Length: 324
Image 1 (cartoon, rainbow, N blue to C red):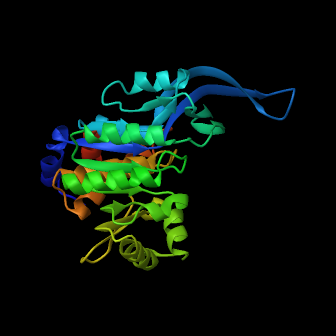
Image 2 (image 1 turned 135 degrees about the vertical axis):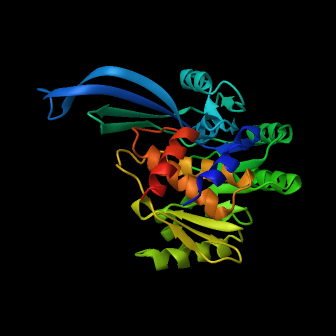
């Protein structure tokens, strides 16, 4: 685990960093309520609503995590020209470079929650149609940005195209900044020669067509992925087994999970990639960055829905772990 002094040194640089988050933007709607009876119409619970709220999801949640840590998350993606886009703008007023497109619809995931349990999720989802005009507008906006790193938050909803991935890679190369990808299976062919890639366990198994049954397997798989995509590093998030990382020219390692309780894993990968990237551009080694990301993930899975963590929360979690 990272020492507190080093943690403070890294975090002290967060507020100077600007991270571009490009990818699939989702608006999350949460309906909280109480269940006291079953409907007479069908064998389903009747939920009496007590609260309703919107939160940024997908790439929006990655940017929100960066904002919460005092840095600037610059959000770029596409939404529909609709009421849900306007809700997103309320949640992300600054550094919002989202294109509202009349030929697309904003992705909406509605979760109904009672007694800290998700009862049902309702998705309004259509694959984004990224026509050449939208690609051109993204590229024009990309040229104007002053950034320290790029995160590609790919949920395989259509925002990421071959043209746009090449533009992002070129910008990273020209500016000599890292580009880190949180991947999804349909787009694996787009990720070669990025700085880092952060699949979860199932995605890593899909990439290599190999089952990961223990830590040694994860070491081998992380190394295969790092070499396959010609990256500086690869990282596999393994849930309650922690995070495995393989860095070019160095020995692979695993940092164990240390969460207290698991209520909801929604957005945990978003938290990992955001804090990992921010830590790296703030001067952290890969092991230090993974330690911070691991601590942050252990906090966010104790919350309901897509959530963010603060520096103070991470500090307290590290202190707790150091006492063990």
